[in-house]
Amino acid sequence: MDAVAYALASNATIYDSPEQINVKTALPDNRYKHGQSTLADGTVLVVGGYSVYGGSELTSVLSYSLVTNAWTAKASLATGRSGMGQSTLDDGTVLVTAGQFGASYSTNVQSYNPTTNSWTTKTAIPPGARRYHGQSTLADGTVLVTGGQVEGSYTADVRSYSRLTNSWTAKASLPATRAYHDQSTLADGTVLVTSGYVSGSYSPDVQSYNPTTNSWTTKTPLPAYRTGFGQSTLGNGDVLVAGGIGSGVTQNTVYQYSPVTNSWTTRTSMTVGVIDFGQSTLADGSALMTGGQISGLTLSNIVTQFVPASIESTPGRAALLGYLAAT
Image (cartoon, rainbow, N blue to C red):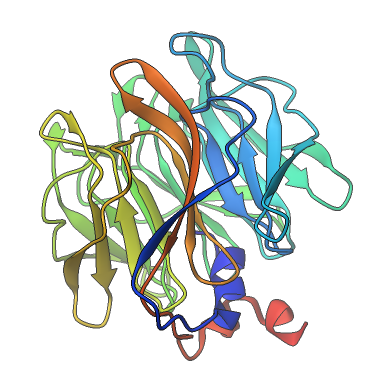
């Protein structure tokens, strides 16, 4: 999850009811392998992906409001893409990096401004064309991109993007090559990178990146490996990992990670197994899951909201984005 969604969740509602999976208004079209992040106003931006299995990447962009439970079309991408990274920055803009473009993939980076509803091209990501990487916004407003496929090879490469200088900086590499994983920024400013295709095989391995020391630490692995899953940091500081493929089967399992105890707990399952969907945390601390592939070649427009049994604000979270706390 990006820093904007995380800071928004600092004002999370405290739920005392049992865990819930709520069905919301469906996407206007089937969609998978798209990008998703929560904006400063609490709406959710869904970008690109596919609506037909084996079809062309979408240029369409959609916005979801939990308040109205409705979708709105936004300014389209210049070129369709899928399998990209996406996160909301500390100025409220959204950074979309690389991904699949037709038969190849790209170094292209785009920035979306929700105030002007427009896209701007930014400095391309080095060292080459990349897809299926992890991405999240850090407490200092920079963006961390990890692993993926670069120029056809799995990589351990890690890069940091600064919107202030519109430039990329190399950071400490992952301990091993990794792709098809996910990541989110935690309350203490570290980044949790979870599972995926690690060092040539599927793995439940979990790593934590500390931007202060520019170093990696191994954490308790997932109960089982996942690829094509969703991940976001909840309003209480825990991390929600949902769906994906495990043991060659589409999963509906949901796991919750506690940074305090460094442990995983199994939560209420999703209504259906799904992979390659969008997931981000809403302003109330719950998580929104959109679209995905549900079975065989069947794509989905289903939208669900995962509401934890209880959400309490984590002290210090507002430090990630002080300007949001002030407003």
